[in-house]
Image 1 (spheres, one colour):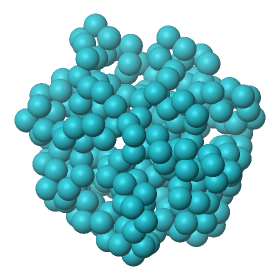
Image 2 (image 1 turned 135 degrees about the horizontal axis):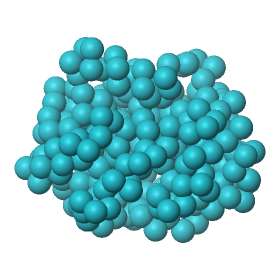
Image 3 (image 1 turned 90 degrees about the horizontal axis):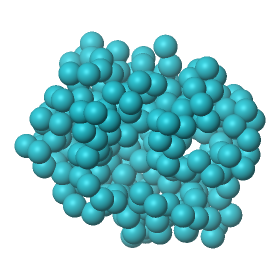
Image 4 (image 1 turned 135 degrees about the vertical axis):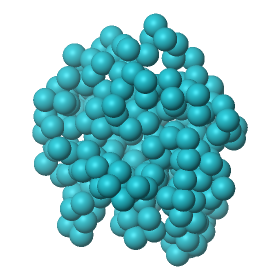
Length: 263
């Protein structure tokens, strides 16, 4: 079992939903980003998604695009992002970490080298948004063989014909994108999400976590109540972009986590 599997088993035993948070590695700078990351578990975060900045983030809205630009301008690299995980693990060996990003930086590094390094520093899973299931031999299957979960996204346009293909090599959890479009573009509605989550859960035993369009404790609670948990990314990244101090950012994260855990 990976840390992700262990976390969901523990939450199920406790009768709680999962709260997953996303931050961009290196935003607003390396040390500040690491300090935020280190504070997330104490603020109630169950799983951390750590963004790997990339120059052409096609699935991301302006908030996360700008975070990636800030990180890249500050010198953030894949190497430094992996080192963030290593440094985080010096004080926390329990909280799962999922690297989220695009295939290009991994391809440039070399899949075998990347997977070896990611496993060594304590990465638990990958979300690579621009690799479809047809390309599973490229990274998904090698990642699974290396002991990393490969988490796939399902969307409102993933129909009954496509869903089995999306699910076939997915592990850890399924990330359901609650809206069509880019991150941070609209608000998720629990009444729209509920039947979609039920449809996915009818085809898999994996937890289904819902992301995109969640920015308040109330929306986190509402979405978590119809799924196995929720993800908040853009709203947290916006707090960072606004220059909020660390304690204010973590207080906001804590309010979202409390909402999700009530779900």
